[in-house]
Every structure is written in C-alpha cells, then in structure tokens.
Image 1 (cartoon, rainbow, N blue to C red):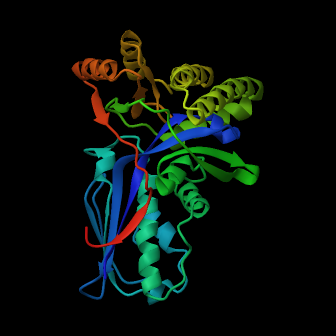
Image 2 (image 1 turned 180 degrees about the horizontal axis):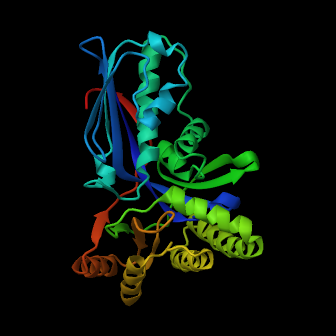
Length: 335
C-alpha cells in the first residue's frame, strides 16, 4: 500500500536573526507544498525520484544510502534498515521553486517533513522501529542537513501548520505556540528572482556577533523588542500595531545587514519597499534575506492589489499565498 505525505512551505513574518538569541519569531505555513510518496518496488531495488531543483532518479539496493542528504538523514535513524523491503518513492518540491531557483519558502524543511512522514508510515508497515516525525526530532535532522545552522522555525511551521510563535529556550530547545494573524490583513509574497543562502548569511551573522558582541547585542535588543510587540499585536488582533511591527522589523533587518556588512536587504528589496511606501502597505524581507522572498501585508485589499500590479511592471513576481492550517499530513494514495 503506497503512502503520500505533503508538508507546506513557510514565510517568516517577524523575528529573523533575533530568534537565534531567544526572541520570538512569528512564522506562517503557506499553501505551497513538498509532496512525498512511497510504495513497494516492482523489482529488487529501491528507486527514488526527486523533482526539484532538477529531476533526478536514483537506484540503490535496500539499506544503501541514496546520496540525497535529507532522505538519508531521516532513514539512517531506522533500526535494522536493511530489513526494509525494496521501495519506489517520489519527492517533489517543485511548488517551492521557480524553475531551478528556490523561492525562499523553506523547501528543505518541507521536504524533510514530507519525507519523514511517509518514511515513518512505511517503516511502521514493515514492523521496523523509526523515530516519530516530531518538531524537535526534525529540527535536529534539519540542523544536521544544514551543518548546524538555523533555528528550526521553518521545520516547526511546516510540521505544525497555521501561524506559530516560535522560540528557542535553554539548550536551544524549541517552544511552539499557535497564534492567529489579525483578521482582514491579506498578504502576498514578492519574489526578487534570485536565491539566497540562508546558511551562509546565518554563519556570517554568528561570526560578526562573536567578533562584535556589543554591537550585536544592541541590534538584537531592538529587533527582539519589535518582534515581541508584533507577536503581541497578532495575539490581540491589533492589525495596526501588527502592520507597524512588520514595517519596523524590515527596517531593523536593513540596519542589521549594514552593521554586519551583508546584503540582508538587497537593492531589489529596497526598490520593492519604496513602492510599498507609495501604496501604504507593509513590506519586509522574509527569512534571512539576501534575495528570495519579501512579504507584504495591507489593511486595504485595493491598495495591496495596486501595489502588486506596480511591482509586476518592474519585473518582480507576485505570489498569491494563503495560510495552510494543517501542516504535514499523511494519506494513502499515489504521487
């Protein structure tokens, strides 16, 4: 019997970088998905097809590593892996890419969530022991995939779904609480057309913070205060304070980038932000920056639509996104 799982992508609304020091991050799961399926092979080999960023087919003997790091990191934790029957699987992240360029929606976190979901079901059906796909477990897997980088907020959003407030507590343990975005505040994603290296930017930030602890501490305190205020506004359904926090945090990310000597807010994002100011909407980089996506919110749907039209004429891609409320889901079927 085949199994299918899907896991959503994410957008970071507030808390980038500051979350690494214990500040809250507000993250939402969105309706772009990675899908994974697994079923019985029709021969003695295991077959894996990955569909993004480029199509790839891999054939291996049962129990052998596939060479796809996030797949192998999940499978390696299964006890008596060689007892797994030959399988045929598909891992499809194309919705989280623009051709071969990642959109910045947390494609690797979604892929780990989707694969962990179908793999756990497959291993259970075979009577084998494998770890459950919990938030804490999959954050560990994702950090290993990223060589220790990242907070894990993208994994938490993908697995949980909806809007979450994410914090790292003692020993970097995650704490996840469900929140709601203010009512009547629609959003869109704006893709700059270029991909960014989250791991590279986070490594740059950590190196700078270690070398300049006083400056880093000052930047962190300001960003943490804005993130706290924005999360509180979301909890209290205060749309005006929420939008103010989104805009302010975008400015703080620009200040952080200048302080640490990195283009967190690129020239493209600054140009989009200037258009946002013209139309009275709230715009910021979403995620580590350096390219990828920006996120825009507005009280007025007409202003949001006019802004979207304006940035399209400047060559940027507008991505319509809705909140995913379910997170990683598992079902029987085929992909």
